[in-house]
Length: 388
Image (cartoon, rainbow, N blue to C red; front, side):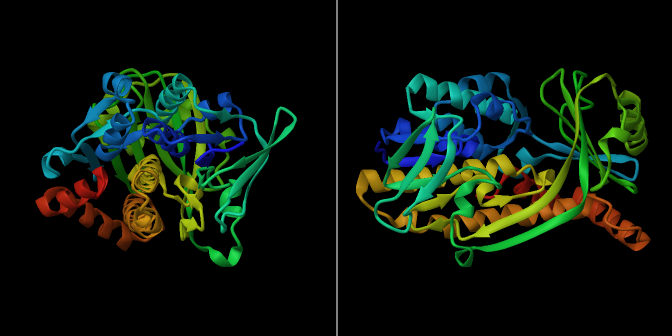
């Protein structure tokens, strides 16, 4: 079996890359070791930067997103029992953020691929990239009991942090930068009206709170907990009471509670693997980098990787030039590290890291400056909506 681009992994990065390539007439095959239902069932946040929204429209996936997505022009920062708004559209020349769940993005991409009739192998076993340092790379796997050898020009490794692509690279060829945080996010999803029309970042002396939404009728809340916290110790009532205590008084009074659709604890990690290219194997998305969710960058970085890799492959197949492919790793890592820095900064600023009274006072002073100075607000806004 032959194709131009073999894509390992059917998350947002792999599916988006596949759709962009298909629209350009570039043959590609996606190989995924999980089932379609498993991939679609992953519950992830979905806060899309302007550039991600533009890329999805470029991939002809805009109609449902534009109809159902919630456009945001700012967000609130609460601290010391008060609230201030960052009007990021006003500060960034009109850029927006859109709340549109990653599950919905994945569903749109899957349906578009089905309509295109592009080849996708789900529940593929023993997936393995080969010979990617040569001019004749290939991917082997077992599907429906038969062994398949997929010959290709390039391999896109979009198979996530635990995927086979990065693990197939010689250890000495990869440099890993990693930081694990000593806390996690306890999240609750409920069919209740959101606390606000915009996302709320809340700094409290006892930890971080995030108030977000999936729709006009579905809310998502997070509170900071120790990394070793036992989810079994948290009832919905305990969660709601804790949330009310940590919010400003006026927010707590308006909070609408209800039975949870889902509760879970997510660990926070910063991770980057360098480089992102190994011969004819390119890493994209979580296979190459992970950010804590505080900066809302994970899905957007994956989309940025897919867009950059598509542009390089399109230039190669259209014009025969490899300049963009040759620069893919360097240019992508520059973008990745900016997002890593912002996500790390927001995480350390809003979360409780120690019992130090000095640290608490210094953080309150920094948040006060960032939310009262136009220069400070612009810094937050530019990074939040995504640096060009």
